[in-house]
Image 1 (cartoon, helix red, strand yellow):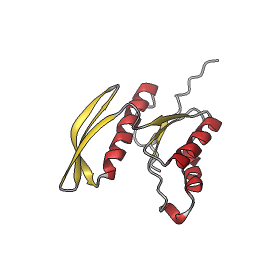
Image 2: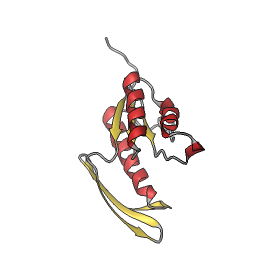
Image 3: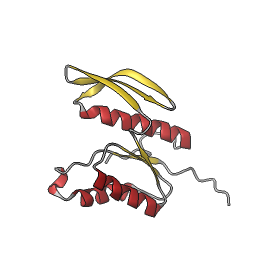
Length: 137
């Protein structure tokens, strides 16, 4: 069967921390996994094991693919006045050194997710025509 439909866009699933809404991690992960659609690629940042298990379960149920951002990524970073200077190396390339605009060490993880999402989207033809293929959670 052939289709002229574009492949499903990819999405990012950023961190899930216990302080989100004061709810159990499983519940928060399930709510955040609500963005997952059939055929989609989900690029996940670092998640607690219990949250990752929930996300993987939802993805499997919906026929979506999970990419763990840190897998096959080597990251070097140093902080400069609260901002991280990072170099990210993946199988598909080297990015940086880059001085991140936003402050905080946690931005390093967000940068890895962004790089992996960009590479995942480029590989799968998700494209970048504006922000309609992007979902920040």
